[in-house]
Image (tube, rainbow, N blue to C red):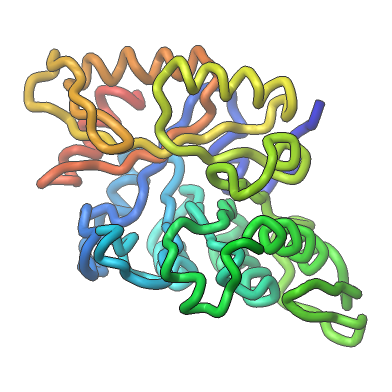
Amino acid sequence: MAELHHENAGYERLFGDAGLTFGAGFPLTGTRESTPSVEAEIDLAKHAESVGFDGLWARDVPTYWPRFGDAGGAFDAWSLLAHVAAHTDAVALGTSSIVLPLRHPIHVAKSAATVDRLSGGRLVLGVASGDRDPEYPAFGVDPDERGRAVRESVAALRALWSERFPTLEGRWGRLDGELDVLPKPTVDALPLLPTGNARQSTEWIAENGDGWVFYHLPESTLRSYLDTWREQAGEKPFVIAIRVALADDPAAEPEPLHLGYRAGVEWFRRYFRRLEELGLDHAIVGFESADPRRAMATFAAEIIE
């Protein structure tokens, strides 16, 4: 059975205590097909921390594909999180998730460690294989090699963070011990949480990840996933991302949304209690709301507290 072994500040904020914690996913304004206001995003990030959210999660979407209908917030994840770090105090900063096949592991290692240092150790690194077909030829990447790229990158990242002047080789290139990558993160290696299946087996994710980020699942399916995860990964955390639209009527029953629900706060309170009982560790909430500031405050007061 695998054990927890990361203690950076962000990981501890999200997973250090028993019970379900909540994060908010960028774009906090809900602007997904254009570029949101930086000022509005930062204002909402500070608001989310102040009302009780434990994490803020930025997505890695290198290009905008209108057919997919989602620019992911438009901003580069590293730059956005560095800016958010300067305007927040203790909330965890997560990526959900860095697309490893489209990024060189040396760049990922340096960027992630930089954000981790700038934030005082608050970075939790979700990683993925990607899901937008036109991006692979745009970057000259063979989509059939995504799984191998994820495995090579994870191995390289751990070495680049924990070793001085490492000797490494992969399809991405070679280091022969003459070069180091600085800065190093605040702990020996940043926590890595694969997202989805990342073109890997559950066994590989349990062995090589420090947790698992998944998408919204029906409760019966989530129960099955959590049972398998606990058998293979022990107490390593399990995270889901979920869309939430709060109905005006607090007693409103749920209506399905893409990867989530529209419902009243009473139903959501019961729902998240059930997920906590199943063993879910963290939920990344994406708000569907014309007034995200109010939605965050209501969610925090009625559900988190």
